[in-house]
Length: 406
Length: 226
Image 1 (cartoon, chains in turn cyan, yellow):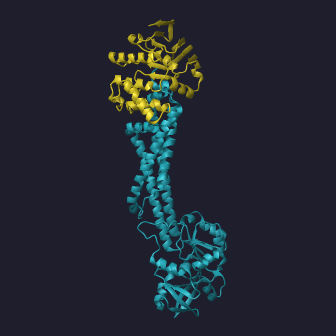
Image 2 (tube, helix red, strand yellow):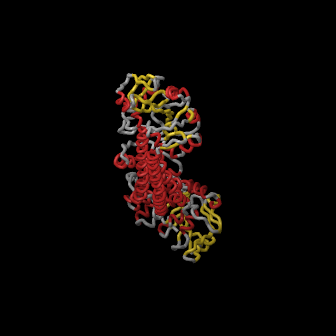
Image 3 (cartoon, chains in turn blue, cyan):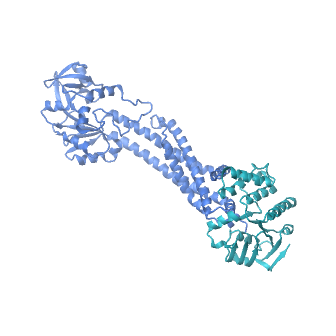
């Protein structure tokens, strides 16, 4: 027989009395695990949507507005290309992707389109040693690299197509938006003349429903040369990590680039931030509830357990058990219950999340094994903390009054 | 082996001071078999618990093998109890959720004996007491006589030199009581010192000598030989 055998036997002997308190802890842990599991996949799903939407932060000239940007009516005002270097060389965290751009209007066959200069990935990396950067590279950090169940983890065919051509971009190569290609009747491999320069169409971009459909993308430095402007930009599109945005990323960029205007696609980011905050507050609320209700319930149960077992404790002391043994007896019980509650809470919470996740948050949810450590940690800390004072009382029990023999 | 020098102990009961032991001095030699008799409330159980290091006196000293018991820390006193003293209770005090075997194993667990040795020794003690076929029975599945025998096996687990028994036959029928007393005589012959508190004159007569307590005092300080 070992100490833990004694503890298990006692737990199963009086399991009915333990039931309510244990259930409170179990349900609390289950709810927290569920919320954490669902919110994790919900955040991933929203981050993936944000990724699909593109940049969520724009760096524009001071006088420009977000409306100007989206209406493709960019002012003549520009800022130095050197801003990109400042950003990449700074210690700002959460910048998942940068896309410096210079746009200018071009007339082709009497119709007006936008010609936008972009920097291909190979040059970008060579220039700033920015690992993973690229115009259409998938952001990391926001977590879209983590597979969202039910959705393809790899880039879609369209994204692949875009990513492939943008890995490198020749001086006279151009990517043409869907509407522009349709209007000009050009296809991949055709030539198109823009501002007196002949470009080869390397890809026709898929329909996006945005101003990009009436846009042609060429090498940044080619567009700068055609515009007669040296090393300047009129926008830097940034894919910022949503958590970093809520943590003050925009303010940090503002501080670094005081001469520029930094705007966020507030509605999208706010939704994400609000969802994240709500989930995290809900999780915190449940944590407080289980600490207060579950902890108090366990402490109450333990005090009653000590009172009920005082004759047993007195007998053990008469047999030579010291206060350390009695303390260990009750704390080990707390530890075992914490482990059991944590593990069972993880299982119930995970099953609940997998079943209810798609209905509540509209996202498929998979089990997260790392949450088992979290659940065990909460279970053990609450049980042991709530049991400490009752256990100490047991260890300090007067053996004579405990035996009630006098 | 066991000594008490001018020991006093009192309790407050509903605001009134009750003297449980009043200037008790006595000596019990190694291998002695002593019964302590007296009316209810005369201080018999108090004296027994005090000899076992479970209850500190208000005044005076208690010695076990020349060591002043209450000058030791509670942890050292617990260790001494584990090593030298075995208690037997009137109500047996078995742990209800453990089997007979496990109840005996507890004492061995406290002494740091582990694994197979624990089980073998506990089983052999229960067999000695005629409970070889009741190893896996819980106390509620045993008769009172069998329960007291489990308690005796548990008491013997650590081979104590001193046995302190509080009304060991108080809850038993005469035949079972006789069997338990015969066992006390047997372990006395093994050289153990036995101090037995009892109301039962027949039980007291089994002891080598009898001490009488009345209102917390050894009557006239006299010791009656059996």
